[in-house]
Image (tube, rainbow, N blue to C red):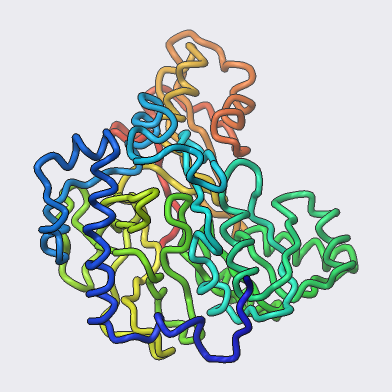
Length: 413
């Protein structure tokens, strides 16, 4: 049921003493670990672990890391969830797939992805109409923000991405006051509306799924839209969200966040950049120390907005080669698949950049000696990654020999 909010925060959990939050979270770790041990893959990975002994961050840090980049192979070997879910499919409300593929379940409860807090912090209130342009097709993105907006009392237009002309018709008809989607598509809609003489109606936005650099933030502000960032994944939903304080992203309730040295799982000192690792505590789908491959840092102190949970600086790059482009993950395994489909290719490298505040993707290819450029390569790129990109044939030896198949050259910050 949607909440009627008059207080400055979504609920009292956001402003409780940090010590109370820590005690409550680690009081639930034992139950989550006990549930995890009923799943065959966790039973093997956590062999010899007594859930009763994991009562602190130091104890949690001794448990093995599970890498998100390994999930596609694990899920393929033991579908659908790689043996990491203790119960059956009937315990969930919805089932999804994300690029990789990685399969995700949705818990059968209101606002299962914890997005209500992010929506509320972005200023969305009961009665607001939200144009939700995140995808509802197979992936959980659309449902993450749909459930969050409704938890904040909003009315949702399930628009999904693309179809700009039809989106403008919907905006003209319903006059939504808020937008949810990638920052790139927000800019596209604003520009298309201006060109068509149908200016968008929203004055607030909750954006995620793609880079939101300062230059684009300034552009959106100048367009009269107050936009807030959120950091979300298909595994956990909302991990952290921006508030009116504009001072980092506040970590969501009900999860444990660690920042570790990439490749080791060892926590770094506060303020140092490292890889973000999340533990979720839902016994139906416990995720124990899942390393996401994203870099960030914990900010010192608490937010001036009054929320007392830790804050992260935001997305600061990738700890591995997996990259998020226009809200979709692209993985080294997918680039390798393109090479397998075209025998003329000797080496290839996917280069990600930014142009006109939009993500760009170029597949640079070295050919086998004497080979001609393969036909249909751009179509293969789109088929495998679900994203359009350019193809560039380069001379033999032009690609760096540095082991990279995905080079993310977008500016950070």
